[in-house]
Image (tube, rainbow, N blue to C red; front, side, top):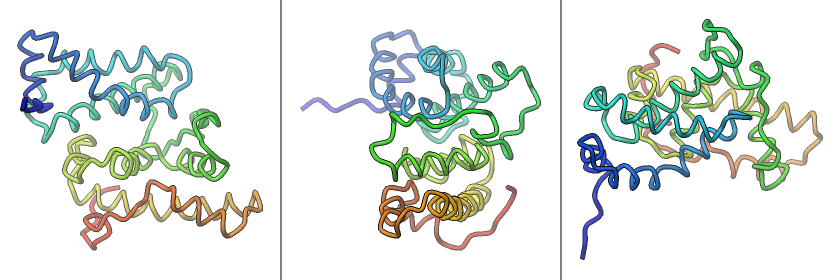
Length: 213
């Protein structure tokens, strides 16, 4: 039985000129990159996805500093996303630790939500500071470890814990506020929370020193 090659092995081969290995990596991770970006950008999505994978090979000398290929990949996703906003808004000073998708004029597409409750969740996420939103999505949708997310954000693990707890708390408040505005029922709120990215992660819910934002 043929053993599937790891991301790390494929990337090493790709960096050495093996285009087939690069194609395999692209196919393996395209859906997650596309899914992550499509709720955050309007036009130019496909070009942005291509830029991410091009950035992977162009930045191969920085790869060894990352814990896993996925941490390296989503670090590039975040970098390219922020560059996209700065270019389209013509503002190099945008601060994504405080700015949200809503403040950037970007709203979640209704077509991406399966029901009203899921759309409500997307709307609430879009009101979080973008770096907090990214922490939640990486941890609970993309299932990256805390260490991997720390590598993506280039912050300490304690900072990841702190941001995740604050983001979850704020997201819960936003969901309650939006539910009240839309007069949703308690049952609907429970449905939202079941579909929320904030599933149980014991490693993140434990008490840990809060450092940074």
